[in-house]
Amino acid sequence: MAAQIWYENDGDLSVLEGKKVAIIGYGSQGHAHALNLRDSGVDVVVGLRPTSKSVEHAKEQGLEVKSVPEAAAEADIIMILAPDQYQRTIWANDIEPNIKPGAAVAFAHGFNIHYGYIKPTEDHPVFMVAPKARATSCVVSTPTAVASQSSWLSNRIRAATLGTSPSYAKALGALRAGAIKTTFTEETETDLFGEQNVLMGGVNKLVEMGFEVLTDAGYQPEIAYFEVCHELKMLVDLMNEGGLNKARWSCSDTAQYGDYTNTVINEDCRKRMQYHLSRIQDGSFAKEFIDDQDAGAPKFKALQEEYGNVRIESVGPKLRAMFSWNNGKDDDADMATFTGKIARG
Ligand code: NAP
Image (cartoon, rainbow, N blue to C red; front, side):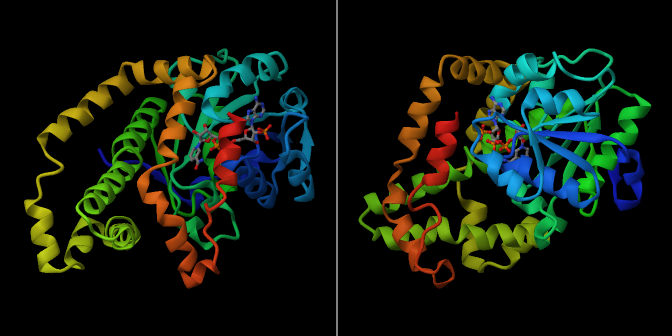
């Protein structure tokens, strides 16, 4: 059956009229949801810890900011956009005791609902609007908003939810690109699978290993960087324009033949992907992640430390700073953003 996709005419902004939307968190997703909804005419309040460094930032951008319990208490829709591993504590301590009867609870990823870490009572419709793009791509003033694609679902077939979710997606700007109807299960499991096996755990490790093999064999690190990392963007851009066929067709016959005959990604990889999918489906990946987070994230922090020092980054910052469009500066050179994110954890 073909996927059901909503576009602009499928969302009705009047559904949100007179309703207050609380956006909990003002990070990667939170700022984009709050600003886009506000610009679409929605009454938005941002819920943050009083100590959050984002309080002033959100206020400067003209948004009303309150504590999480206060924002939750007055909202008709509560969109929870804090990191997944903290959502259940925020829900239990700050939202559930204060939520209005009948208020809807919303997410940008299905993790906590799918794995049962958050269980709103039947009184609260639950929906998800999950941008399949970096949140900065959702901001109205960014042309790439048209490239973002969202998945939407209702886990309870209720008229209220059915009306609210596409309307929320429209206010976010997500219906311009289209929103695919899905389920919490499908979104959660495919999202985790994609990031673990292809987008992050796949590509990142291919880049690292390719760099190490070349430099171990005596090739210059600068050359290795370009061959295994820099050119990826060109290939991915071609895939986004015209799929694998365009990406292959645009490269030389030599490159194509090497692609077809290469044996690095083989049937063993398929089996390992299936193994990792089974760990997502049976909940063992989620349990391992959340148990580690609950213990203070010792494994996660050790892995961040280990992978923050991969060999390719001994040359990456220097090369990226040399690109004229970067104005002599590497975006990740001081790692402030990344380490800030680690510290927040
Ligand atoms: P993020 O950038 O790490 O969010 C950080 C925000 O959460 C900050 O404002 C932080 O406030 C707040 N926060 C953290 N702990 C809190 C607490 N205990 N109480 C209140 N606020 C707290 O997170 P994100 O990447 O936007 O992810 C949010 C959700 O969107 C997740 O469900 C994620 O899976 C989903 N998602 C993300 C993306 C993406 O591109 N990042 C894409 C699709 C879906 P402080 O300043 O107080 O720390």
